[in-house]
Image (cartoon, rainbow, N blue to C red):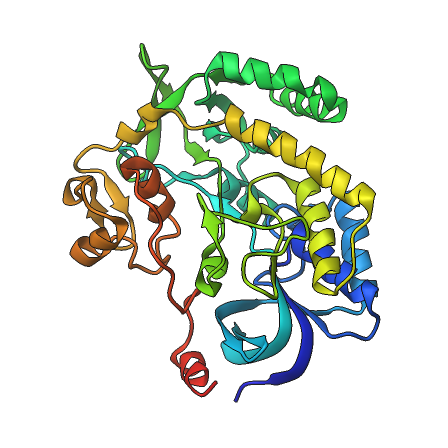
Length: 425
């Protein structure tokens, strides 16, 4: 039997920096109001502030998690959102926690659902020991040892720097960091950081931690080579190719906003980014959004957007300083997006025999560029597996120039008992 909360003022979905800030600020704005933070993790923090054996969260994370704990917000961890639907002037949020259904009734919702890595298919990308850059970071925080392993990091975006630094500090032998962005674009972006000396200093400090590894721009992985495990990778700059021996390849091409829940609710989404106004309100009344779903921008932007969204959802106004800080961080995020835009050569990496949908074992030759993503689902089941297109969806949108398909519940895999509970909603 589900537990029903009647009524909740606000449900915040997602326990990363944006969700923490939204829940804390909303609960502080009106003491005694029911503010519920729903998160899949064991504790608030998200991927960026995930802790593990010997891993201490940064000071900023400790300050915000302590503020959240003192705010009076109710934290519902290890809980996934399965469906959301209108209920009069409010919403009903169907969740699953520890295998049991949980229904939350609320007046307003703040979506702080974060982002996920974007993977692009290339020959050998499904070999053992080929993993996501963020996935390697999560494994490291969970206690996995990479000591003495030869590691190549290839893809795009600033996440490669802290992961390379962390792996090196953990005893790994980082042999190559390959950034697909052309050298001149990286140089221009680096030069623009004179306005943010703290970011420039942080980047320099991270690079200093893996000085023994080659950092190459305008370079990407063409294929991964091995049998039962990875042995080497073929990298190219578009003119020359060479083999690099390695035991592990960490790869990822930036982040993709998790906007599925917003799309399910009918919010306007532009290029996977949820459209919001100055109050972080979406185009659907009562629904607010903050953090990476509105565009990839990092921790600082997520925090200030979460703060504004939480206050707005409670009917309060954010300070002028918060709005000014958000504007500056938005400009930085736009520059970041332009600097690390993916090159067209990456669209043609996959060969005919390359698996593009792991769940359903769909290969590149099975797809027709003239199709839509919906047709690909109907004809080949691409995107119909357990991950519900979270891996292949963004990859095929880029490779095939498709637009995302519609979203239907359940948003996350759920037990039949939970879905039956939804039918009784």
